Amino acid sequence: MKKTVEIISVLWEGPIEIIDFFKFNSTDEKSFDLYQIYGTHPIYGRSVLLYIGSTKRENQRIKEHYESWMKYEFDSMQVFKGKVICIPGESTK
Image (cartoon, rainbow, N blue to C red; front, side, top):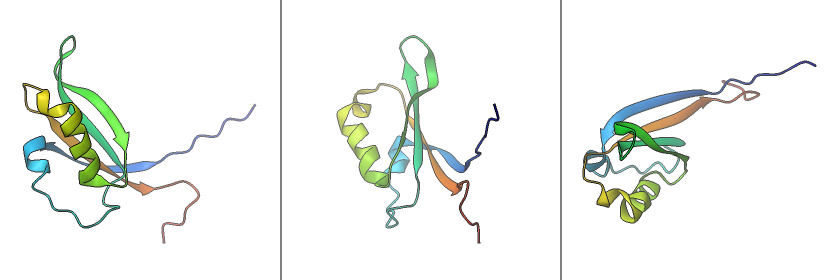
């Protein structure tokens, strides 16, 4: 049985403190596709991956997380933004 592996390239930017993240006024609704949120976990400690997601609504999605749970965190939180730069089968021209 032949297995096929597809590799997707992602360009990551960060870490960005959550306070600083909201200072960015992005007008490009497709400015990033993936994001990671790091913070403190009661068992695993500080600076651990708490959430990973995908979006086309950049600041709006992070604000939704902030309003629902991030604003209650005691320690600082960081966000990494990821842009998919190469999708298998697509032309890179």
